[in-house]
Amino acid sequence: MVRKMKKKILAGILAGMLTISSTGCGQSAGETADTVESTENTENTETESPAETAAELMAKVNGKESNVIDDNYRTWYEVFVYSFYDSDGDGVGDLKGLTENLDYINDGDDSTDSDLGCNGIWLMPIMPSTTYHKYDVTDYCDIDEEYGSLEDFKVFMEECHNRGIHVIIDLVMNHSSSKHEWFLSAADYLKGLPEGEEPDTEVCPYVDYYHFSKEGGNGYQLLDGTDWYYECQFWSEMPDLNLENEALRSEFEEIVDFWLNLGVDGFRLDAAKEYYSGSVDANVEVLSWFSDMVKGKKEDAYIVAEVWNDMETYAKYYAGGIDSCFDFDFADSTGIIATTLKDGSAISYGKELERVQETISSYNQNYIDAPFYTNHDMARGAGYYSGDYSENQTKIAQAMNLLMSGSAFLYYGEELGMKGSGKDENKRAPMYWSEDASAEGMCHGPLDMDTVKMKYGSLETQRTDGDSIYEFVKETIKLRNTYPEIARGEVSLEESLSDDNVCVIRKTYEESEISLIYNLSESEQTVDVSGLTLNGRTGADLRVSGELLTGNTGAELENASLTMPAYSVVVLE
Image 1: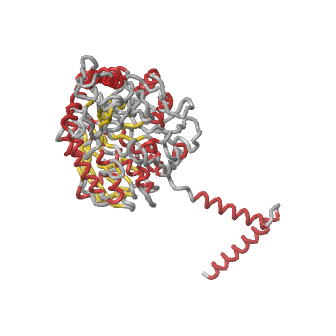
Image 2 (image 1 turned 90 degrees about the vertical axis):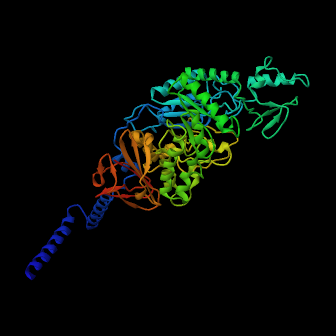
Image 3 (image 1 turned 180 degrees about the horizontal axis):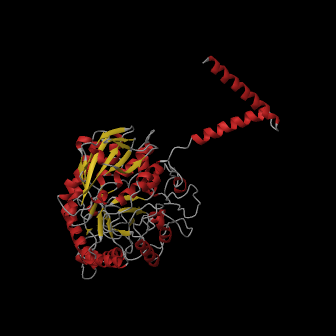
């Protein structure tokens, strides 16, 4: 043994001498040392490969082909045209700019992943108006000149339908503009009416299109030059319409014909609870009339109403036969999604999903829930959270909305984590295409908007960042488009598998089942799914077929034990 060791030592010495002597062939000993150090550094660089991004990890799992069904269970993208994309350099977004960027929303090719994947667009008001927001309509059968022309709208509709995108438009029936010809005619008539004489609708039918009264009150305004008051619950320049009037209803039937003939696929009804403020029954009657009228013209038209109230109240509006009411209980900084992430429990989120079904189905078995997280009247979601996990929470909140059953709505820019709070103008800031405010297509936003400092990067930045909010939202919509069970499935909570950190639900659609498992905590969680059965497969036979990640660690399923990273979602089937 000693002899062998001596031989090895001697061999090492000789090898070292040969190495030193070899430096004489055009190379110094110092150069050799540099070469060795350089080689070592190269080797270290090669072995330390960068961690995979969340997008790369998700792409490995979320590879199943999309299965988009052409019905009214869609993923809708809410667009404020004014702030979306400016095609002519005047600082105001327009229909041409929106049309030019339809490929961002959906390019019509299910095999690509460069678009968001939304297959519906809700246009906030596009009709002529005196304001930037355009909720005071002066003409219900035209396009506001700031946005373009009817020809521009026709091109927009054609391009949307070529991509499989349905379009609904905001229809404001609660009130018109004070500059609408109906109100101007009524006002002129009343100003010329002799004192003590009652209005004659045979002479001026428009006087009965509104709520005129000799007595004022809350929400009433005195008409200049008269002793008549008119109802205007929102603003003096938005006089409330009298939807009990049959002639006015006929006007709206012609308005519906006009837009359906242009190809629109349905309507978003603004302020539906204010048609008759404080009277659910009267409002439901209006919706019943409207739904029957529209569906009689276009059976598959989609109708969604804004009833800003609690679920127990807006559920009653489904009795009017409309498809959807916006699900306000889950939205805003005080809604179920945000409060669950800030100080609630995951299992309570699952229980609320079940409550949606139980509450609404009692009024209309054919309902389509309309979940949303934020809209143009609410502070944007990125501002709801602070601290080390705020970006993770901003991402997972979008999944909690977009994976709900029904027709899910996404407000423009939420896929980028845009910010905006306070006055309404701030909530409608320019779409964040670029950090350069002077870049092509960028809008100046509402003129009274405060400076809105964004927390996360623009689309330019986020498109090249595999860990961005944009990539997360895009993957979420991809899963929604892959599994029909997500939008259409009946929800059942797996209560025995759920707790404060984890929510496990089953979605069943046409005898097909999937499970959505949410880790809504800031730490890794392990779920024993050995007792879970889906489509006849149990425990170890289940597989992870989709995942949403807010970090750089993927989920693992081994021997019916599912390990999930913080703030993640897994699809099991």
